[in-house]
Image (cartoon, rainbow, N blue to C red):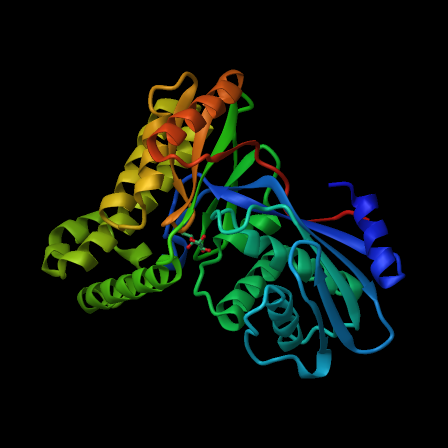
Length: 383
Ligand code: GLA
């Protein structure tokens, strides 16, 4: 997107010159449903972004508009609604609320949003708007916070204001993403390790174009099941605070007394953590065959043990098998639809994209969207 044209459109609406901020969506290479278990994830920011333009206004109001969604919202910063309003503007409002609670002094502002992250595709359009809004509101208030703190506050906005009990992964990578790198993130310490993605590889993201309704309810149900697992293991060893602390040996030794469903969820999380740490090592060492195996195991585990895949995602993963240049692929994000992520050799990426689209279309009758991406930088001030 041309920042200068976005700026002109803002000026037409609000008759002031804005500052513009950009925050990206993400794909997760491996480490799924581990973030809220204090575990490991390995996402990368990608080239889809949400843009937020902002300029001061003389009163103490926050006006919010979007170029993609209807609504002309205006709120008094002294009396923001205590919880979600059910509109898209909740992401901006939630961030403003949390920043005020954190003690930031926000100024009255006109805000215009332009989103290019596909919505409902599991590529974190919500984290992108939250992070870009946070930077915009803080920039206007001339307040600086560390990016990790901004990620935490944006997650809090989504948890407490919007009402989705998500983990920290999406907001973190939208803040801290680095071009040509994935981030191996320890979601307990929030310490990132930047893992270079070989220049010979592209991230090919395949959108199944479906989103099944169970997504939010099932997400919260999985979280509750993990918490039940933690309660069981904590009785055996009080130092266990999250599934992150359960070793594979402990799982093998004691896990079978758990109800079947809880056991399956725990197996996924404990082994997915191991796979993620190993995948980071493999990527660093250029062991592409091993990465491919780990991504495949991750997908199978999400399908069979964590039960968050769906027929369309499974078909898209199958459709990649055997295509030239394919190194590994799996579903990415929360599941029940959305996208798969594939590591593909650069010289094969456009043929791969065309062929996987054709195979998926033949199998499902649905035309998918396929994006050839690379890892990009996190949030930025553009002007
Ligand atoms: C969603 C959430 C993340 C993470 C993934 C699953 O994207 O926003 O915090 O839990 O699902 O890995």
